[in-house]
Length: 150
Image (cartoon, rainbow, N blue to C red):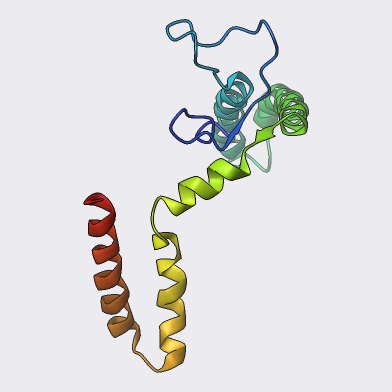
């Protein structure tokens, strides 16, 4: 969503209410604040992995050194994950999607997005994978050059 909302992509964006402020430096810009918040919270959630893994090694037939860690990370991890899921659900419910821009962006490459599919099909026509790659790459590079030259 964060990438799709970029000005030069603009395929989807978070709902932006009337009066909501965007970028402090660029007033025209609508920051994907919910997506950015979820991304930041993912870092916090992932930070619980290290202490959880360190809990695996216990002394003397399972001491209780793991208990204090679990009492801390488990509630915080579940509460954080729940908050993130609620925020994501709300974001998706109100997500604005622009299929016309998606199609426009796909068409910018003159069909090059399908080169992988063509590469997969050619061996079924009796062409070796190596030869198929050369054929597809040669033609894709020609299309790319034509696109660059207008």
